[in-house]
View 1 (tube, rainbow, N blue to C red):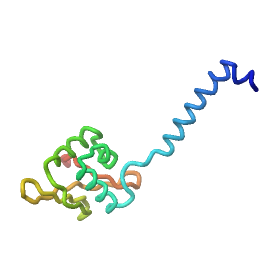
View 2 (cartoon, helix red, strand yellow; view 1 turned 180 degrees about the vertical axis):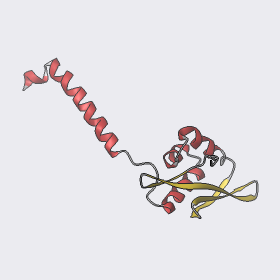
View 3 (cartoon, rainbow, N blue to C red; view 1 turned 120 degrees about the horizontal axis):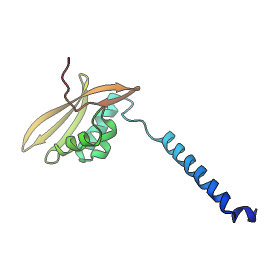
View 4 (tube, one colour; view 1 turned 135 degrees about the horizontal axis):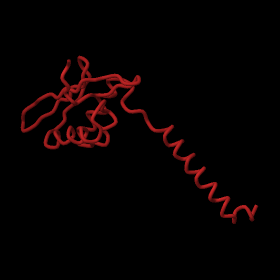
Length: 125
């Protein structure tokens, strides 16, 4: 056994196998994007916008990735997010900016059985 532990070939084999196993397990345990229910989605989106954390918002988006998440979170830098609810097929975020109350609607989509929002306005054809 001691000879095996001091053998360089043994370690050259063990490290790649261990690394691949770790990567496989990490991918298998990676959380799915989106939320299980529209209400949970509304809560998570609201919390991400309230804390201006685009990293929390990014996995909740249907399209756009990091750039869209950052742009969306930046829109709320000077606003106070009051609450967010799921209503009429969209997450409605109620916020106050410069003393004026307003709403921001994010249409909800279902992708692979998980609920996500689509902050990108796309023309319908």
